[in-house]
Image 1: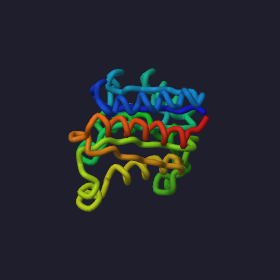
Image 2: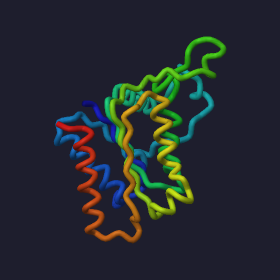
Image 3: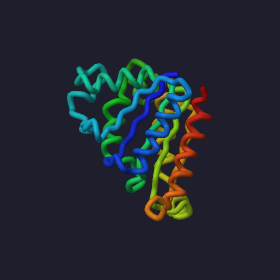
Length: 197
């Protein structure tokens, strides 16, 4: 299976980075083809210019490459921290520039097309979102409503991804080495179950 792994965290020493590496290693051990992008280390430009908005726009080579890769992907893993109930801006920019009309979704032709149901274009059979947070579960669910769950589930479903899974590792700031090692083992287990050999 062709699986894209997208990491959005500025530090190579972060738990997010370790999570992404554990996911990539597990996928490769299970004989999957992996395309891995560390958006910060690649200095991905998240700013969507006006000339890129329309379907069929001429895209910079690096955006075209991302679009081609996600169009070919059969699996997707997204790794990022929970910042203010949202992904980091660099990942939101990746969504804006890569999960675009004509690549991830489309609308029926005609003047009423955009008001109707989207045509789902991604062929991703399973997606896994792995998050870290410093917010305790009770507060996240009762006071904040876990906006990341809603955001990713709806965004990916709009593009045709029905088999969606998400896991949050918390509370990172007070975690022990043993807890972080256990979380990495959990990552390997979840990735292995969703993308078996």
